[in-house]
Length: 329
Image (cartoon, rainbow, N blue to C red):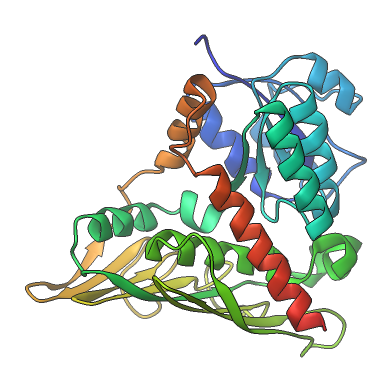
């Protein structure tokens, strides 16, 4: 396969920066990008990727024949853009949430079945965090035995003044559980090895007044249990957007990930705490790498599913959407 050609549809979320940047680090070529209007990330995107060409329409991007389209548009628009790309014979890597309704998810499933294209969701709290890579290696090596529970915490900073209108509209962003809790659902399924789960608790609450700023989910599967808490209450003094954490409980040990900051502790990111029968230590996992992107390149070339099984992407979004429905009922 020659150099991978990628394009971008929608830069309404800054996740587009990491998605495109990681592909370019693998020597992919950006053949163009499109976005609707002038979203807040626009200036930063142009500054970071000055050689990428803005195109006037979605069709112009698709006619450039990229191998992969990256989608970071307004969440409610992502499914339609993904379907247009796949129907044009192009694989898709979309920001989370990949869709905002079960009807959209069904349409995506139908399109994947019909076209044979890849619909991958970049769950960046796993795929763009090196310490999660190291945790996966340890779990696969049996360092904590069989995983029986995950506890995922996903606090976020609100930055209200810079948020667009769609951020506060659940019809456009999908709600807090569909949006940011999908990260933790992904990690629960991945680390327990579950292919399905029951949502036993779902709560989405407006504490601050005008939008859902707190949410929680409990999950149960034959392989294990999970608890998820997400919120928009990161305080101003924290030096990053959120103190994201994941605790993985195994039959023979535990792993705790302090992904972005170690408050009162070590500098930097990607702190991994491992305790088992022979080890009790803190590990700097910042050098563990981000294999999702190279695996996705291989999947595009080989028509394989090494980055993420297609069924996994579907199931994560299904569970997030069903949890949101339960919370909103």
